[in-house]
Structures are given as structure tokens and as C-alpha cells.
Length: 219
Image (cartoon, rainbow, N blue to C red; front, side, top):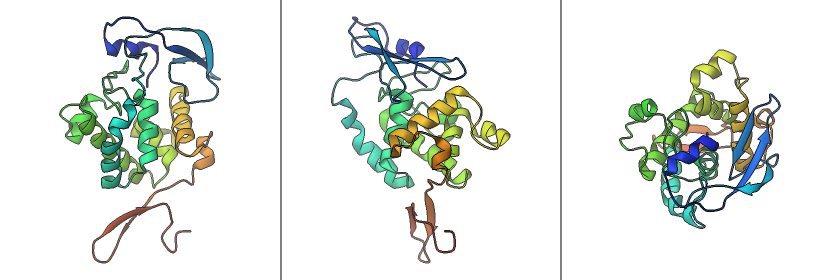
């Protein structure tokens, strides 16, 4: 969700150099970023940005969110690496990022979604991460543990996924799913990891656990 227009979210500041990369999608859509997460991006040979970098935080800044990621990931049974991958693609770890559609913060929550999740301040990293991970957990459950479909719904909305009965034919959404899965487990094709699932198990004593190992009888 972060392309050229999102740089304005950082506000006016003294210019600083940040490398610009370009990707031409098969449908002709052109993507620009300062933080390529797909090997198809090509460096354009010029720079642009703001004092903090073009949607880039100073070195080491991403580690400040590790505790919040770990806590929310454990609370909702979502792999930490998956949460980090979503944040990387959504906002490049910029807590003040705003997309052209109005999505806000690290996990790019739309105002309506944030309100439904009880997130009062989408620019508060902990609130944003907790709400975003809770939302992602709900989508994983909603789409029978299919990460590609859950990620597609996170990007394009549940209705789009149910309407098309799969990943919608939107260049942005397909690119989004590919980039997140690539960062998460090295996969380059969402269809290739359709079997990547996270199972929720409730034990007899009420204990809830999450695992990627299918319960007996579901292999």
C-alpha cells in the first residue's frame, strides 16, 4: 500500500537521498518504492525522499517494534515473521504512513476497520499492531487458514475475495500477496503456498493453541 504518493505522509522536511526502485507489472501498472521487497524491482539511478528517508526509518528503527509484534503474534496465534512481513509491505515500518486510500499506520488500517477493532489511535504502534494482527487472525480463520486468501482479503477486502472465489484479479493485490509471502517464507507465487495454513486447536481443558501441523484426520 505504499507507493510514491504515500511519501507525503511524512510531511515537509529537509530533503535527503533515498534510492528509488521501479517495477512494471504485467498489466502495465507501474510501482515505485524506496524499499523493494520483490526481486523484480529495478533501481532507477536517482534518489528522492525526506529527512527520515522515503518511507524509510533510520537504521535499527524497525527493532523498536519487535516487542509489540511478539506480544500480538503470541496473543492471536500469528507467526511473528508473517506480522513483520505484512508491516514491511504495508508501511515499510513507518508508523505515520498514510496510503492514498486513507489507510493508516504500521499495518495500514482503514479508519472504519480500526473503529471496528477498537483501535482509537492508528498512529500508535502498539494499538495499530494489535488491531492489525487481530484483523489478520480473523481473516485467516475466515478463509480456512489459507494465507494467500487471508492476505488478499487484508489488502482488497473480504468481499472481493468471496466475489472472485480466490485472489482478486487486481494487480496491486496479487503483487501484495506475492511480496508478503516472499518475505514470510521465500515463496514467489501465492498459489504455490496455498497449503500454508495455521490451525487453531482447542484442547479439552480449554487451552487454545495455534500450529502449522494439521490436527489428526485433517492431513
